[in-house]
Length: 164
Image 1 (cartoon, rainbow, N blue to C red):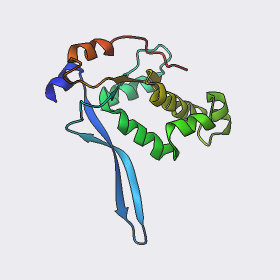
Image 2: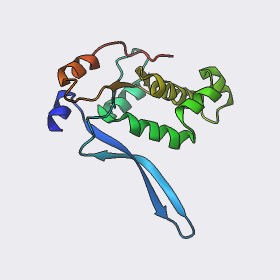
Image 3: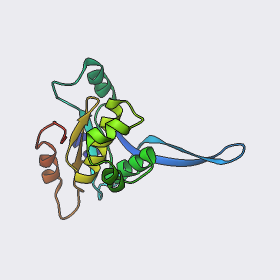
Image 4: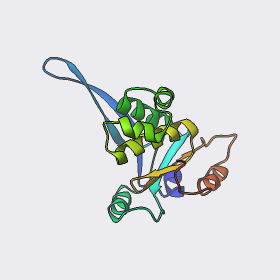
């Protein structure tokens, strides 16, 4: 795992966690991202990194620098989305066919709603996107049939611009 971290200059490895906690009267789900020592490289992963876009504000640039480069599995991001929104990506995109439609009816601010919609689109298409000064991209698993050099080359391809 150290070699993988060094190759991709990662500051942190993350996993999404759901813990059931007993309250005085009921069980409550606590959810969130926790740092971990390892992630399965046999699954698709998401690398997040500071965006190089000129549209990033100074505050977003500072936040992205503080957060640094991180990685989590695509499955963790899907679980995060389902817990955040309360439905799966496919259902969400069927009910919300456009960003404008979702922003108009959302309980979130326009910026938050835009992030949620772009995240859903990203999880569906696996095409990179940026929000809040952080870019997200999917990398294929590194296994015997796909060497790490190909995966690393693929990481540098494309644009930092979100898909829409």
